Image 1 (spheres, protein in one colour):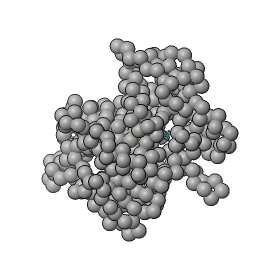
Image 2 (cartoon, rainbow, N blue to C red):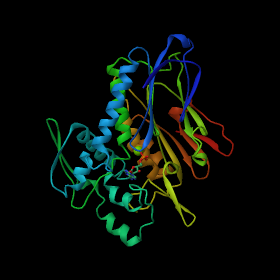
Image 3 (spheres, rainbow, N blue to C red):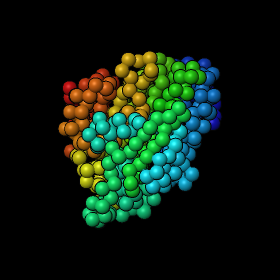
Image 4 (cartoon, rainbow, N blue to C red):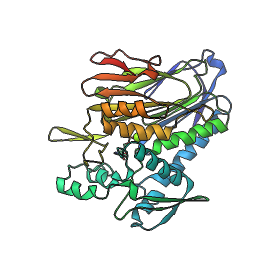
Length: 356
Ligand code: AMP
Ligand code: MG
């Protein structure tokens, strides 16, 4: 980790950020971590920043060790190997499973962590990509149903039982949960300006040190290799912003693209007419109706599966506070009206609409 004085503009993944108006005054602590299969950037300003960023790094490594299904010694691997026997899990996994099941119900099963064996069949766990046969998928789909998971909360975690033959994959929600934990760490250390970017999961604390909003780029799916190519910019304070996109992980076979977000009802990569979904929610336990990184992460995956029409219906009827930026395969950028003063975009080749 390094600590330095802020000097000029910094371009960081999709974060378009500039430092404070009084550069000499603002100490910034930063770290870049590779974990959970992604590059993670952490930044916190002020005297408390260094401790906060150090603690955040430790938290990331600890959560990865507990939650990864590709690590042999993780709690998730033990649960997946338990063959349907009850297993004690710690408080993080207990909380995550509870949230995953809740958001699954809320999204009509578009989000389902028991999609794991199907994601594996496509090779997304091992990078040995292949197109499974329909017979294979039909067989694997009989294992996809998270209502068969039992979670009994205990004093220090939960006793969890998976259904027969079931395995779980927290890849669609774990980074969001991690961002919530880091938000808590920033708060506990008294960090008032900071940000984190965990591979498509962004959390901004407060404003930039100069009092202006953070600028978060929404990636152009057509230029996925260029992480500075945006369809527009969100101006956010105390907020989570999470993007799911087919362009983030995919392979091509016989001229067809197969991406990593699986429709649990078909076993195929979701073909819903969306290229990406960004979910934005207010942060902070003090804020009434605040969202969480966990929620945004689960919703971004689920709404990608749903497609534009269902996603907008979900947004209109949900009691939760969040907004959306949808990018469709016919090159429209659809922004819900809570973001109308916070999103600006004018990229050639896209049309922009605000919906209410
Ligand atoms: P995200 O980038 O948050 O949309 O998460 C995508 C990851 O979540 C994939 O790489 C899988 O590990 C997992 N996943 C894929 N499809 C689903 C789904 N329908 N519900 C829950 N998790 C999923
Ligand atoms: Mg997600």
